[in-house]
Length: 89
Image (tube, rainbow, N blue to C red; front, side, top):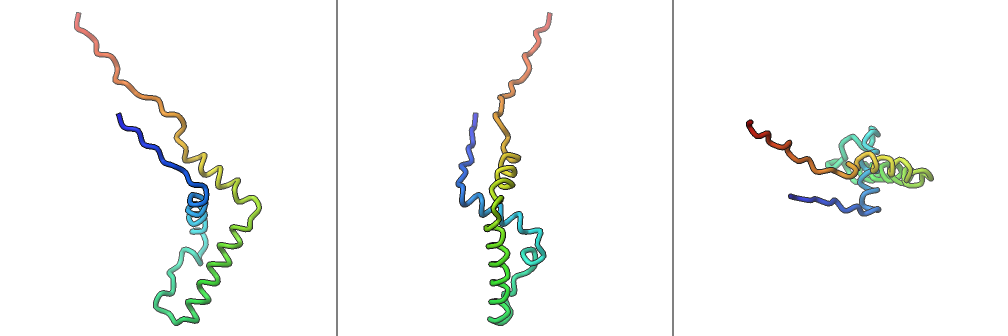
């Protein structure tokens, strides 16, 4: 029998969840201007930072995070044993 436990680290899980939830934004979903000039890159980083900070300042941020985490929880798993073999009469 194998048992796997996934430890939850509050801050890392919150940041990961927030990253996924922000993917709905066109800014976050778009390509980073890796080959643009320094000024364009600075504007992009500042815009992404504002979006991230705005999400982190949301007073009710932990409620949807907790709901998403609860939705991922499989609950208590019960072992499934094979059905008993029937003996021929």
